[in-house]
Every structure is written in structure tokens, then in C-alpha cells.
Image 1 (tube, rainbow, N blue to C red):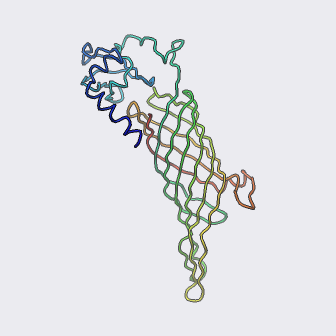
Image 2: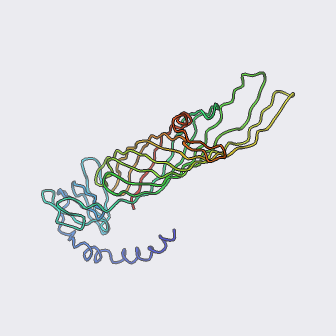
Image 3: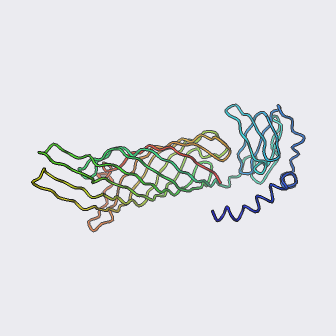
Length: 286
């Protein structure tokens, strides 16, 4: 919000002098463009597309491609050339290929953390929320920081006598750093990528009440366990605009080190206490 308040006056000034600004900053003469003709558009972040020009107004151009129609802000355009021509050399171009400067992005989403077993206690599937920020180092590698929260209800066993249980659910909070690899190009409509990382997770078990009719009752206190997790997975993203993508990911995270007095390192036996998750959300470049 503070950043927005700082740049808001500049946005107002630019909007008032938009025609002059675009002419001075990009050198593009939009009056010479013909609607209905095919053009290639190169943005300042290196993303490009090609399609039919449908409309030009004071702030944007509308391009219809084979897949969808884009409204592109003039401030984001570096070059526009006829479809049969090539872009001139820019700061992004070295040896006829784009010099990569790195994407920066926000992301947020939700999904399902599937049923799991935790030290012989069973939990049903629950909802998951995640969000974070990241950047790419090349068209095939990047890094991101992720915060996640999920809640999985405990599955109680009522097979013994007239036992009754309440509570005992598990809330999981985690902060991880993920390495991303695969196709991360901002110029492509589709991205497929892998995820490998790890971080700190906190499992909080809520209070659980147990009773056996009127004869016996007991309340188990809540418990908190801190641990180091490893996370692996894969994702698929589809670009819906020059700065936005919808994505879906599948992942599996499991503990390798418990941060308690009796902590241990055993990634092989700990795999069974992991969580499989399926998520969907948005990625926004900035």
C-alpha cells in the first residue's frame, strides 16, 4: 500500500500527458498502425505476441491472437512491427536472443491437503492456502518463498465401547524456499515446471476430549511440533494476460528433522508422515 501511495501521483501525471509520454518514451507512432492488420508486439519485460490489431485508444492497444485477445497498456510496449518484420535490437537482445533479466512475481492459491497418517493417528483431507513471492534467474530456473496453512480434521475411532472423541485436529503452518526448474519463460503461453525445496513447519494439534459414557472422561492438551520439511512437486501455468497466469500444482512434503529434544534425522521412514496436496491459483508478474 505504501508503494502504491508513492507512485499514485506519478500515475496521475502520466495519465494527463499520456500521448506525449508514449511518444517520447517509446518513439512509437500509433497513428500509423492500421486496424485489421497483423503485428508483432514486444513488451519491455521481453514478452512478445503476434496477432491482428483490433483497436488503438489513448492508453492501450487490443491484439487478437490465435488463442485469445489481449488488451496491452502502451506503457508496457517496447516495439510494434508488422508481422513479417523483425524487432530491432534492444537492451534485451544479445546475439539475436533475449538477454534474460529475471521475472519477479507474486502468487496465491488454495487447494486440498489430502488424508494422511501421523504417528498412527489418521487425519482426513483438509483445505490448504498458500501465497508468496519469487523471481527467476533464467528461462529455466528460479526461486520462491512460500507461506502455507492447512487444517486436517482427525479421524476418530469409535469402535471401542461407547467412546466419544472431540477435537484433536491438526493445523499446519509452514514457510519454505523452493527451487523452480523447467519452462519459466514469460513469453510462452504455457509453462511446465518442477519444484524442490524445504523449510520449517509447525504442526499444532488442537485439544481433544475423550469420554466413555458417564464413567470416564479426559481432555488431552493441545500439542505443537516443529520440524524441517522437504517438498517436491510440479506445476502447470497458463498465461491469461501479459502479466498474469493461472496455475495448478501437485506436491508432496514430508519431515526429515524434528526440532525437539528427541529430534532425529530419518528422511526414509518419515516419508510416510508426509502430505500430498493439489493446489490452484494465480501468478502475477511485477
